[in-house]
Amino acid sequence: MKRWKGLPVLIFITCLTVALSACGGSADLGKLGKTDPSDVLVAYFSCTNHTKSVANYIADITGGTLYEITPEIPYTSEDLNYNSDCRANREQNDDSARPAIKGEVENMEQYDVIYLGYPIWWGQAPKIIYTFLESYDLSGKTIVPFCTSGSSSIGSSATNLHSSASGATWLNGKRFSGAAQRSEVENWVNGLNG
Image (cartoon, rainbow, N blue to C red; front, side):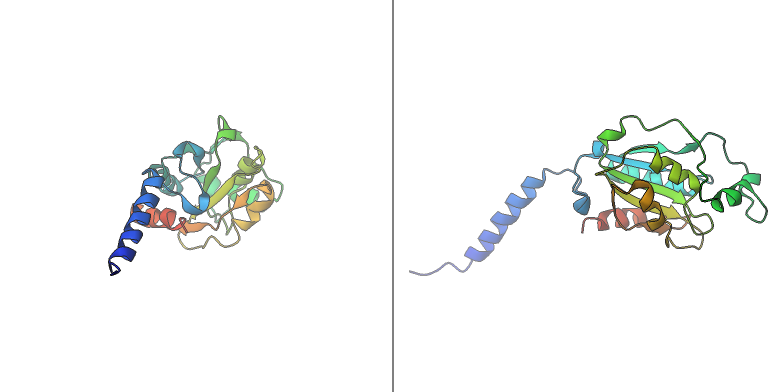
């Protein structure tokens, strides 16, 4: 009896077809283990709209819910004048600073994955990000940090946030320039697939 030489190929194609059909065509977040966009929150803080732009890309790519972290007292241009004793500098130099947030995330319990975006201020996340993290029980959630900066890397900004949500699983973050393009953001999000 002759063995058909195409059998291994047929088995491979059958296995591949079964695997692809099991995916159901929904977005796969790989390492994040989520396929339902309703489980994804994209929370961000932005004063100059650079971080907002990246957050919008991520929400569009993942289908997640977009949430802007809005300070109760908005930052003015004087508050962000880094060459002076401005509000942002005073907050960054005060470990206990926790600027108040206007509003809150409704139904935080429904989200399993949180993309967390912020600008880099003096090498770190703004203190309002600590306020956000400490306002919720984030135990069991996966947090994916991202930041924007003209020159600084994400550095220790993300790891320094871990203690404010110690029950969460933190993935490695990414720094984007203020002029980041959607394709760069999409490559990063897709790269989280493993």
